[in-house]
Length: 121
Image (tube, rainbow, N blue to C red; front, side):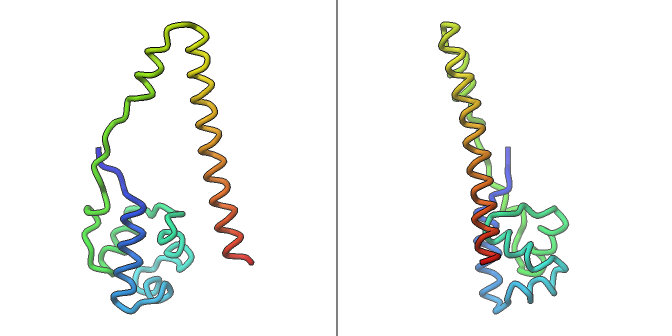
């Protein structure tokens, strides 16, 4: 399955924009995409719509399909879950999954607040 690589996209947009001598505002004028959105894309803080991705590809002359990378299905957690033999082990695995989800949510919130703090010093 292919997924959009936000890292590849962010690097490509920033590098191509700088190669063309464009500011984020200049790229905004070419694409019709708000400058703040372009900034967020470059910081991997925003996933553009297909329309926005196409506009960026046209303006910066890159193939948008190259931003999609093949991913492997990782069934390690499913395997771990099914290998838990006792009820206590199954409960432990479920608890681990819940903690991982909460941790991921905290990481995303922290990034959001850090980005807002940088934008509004």
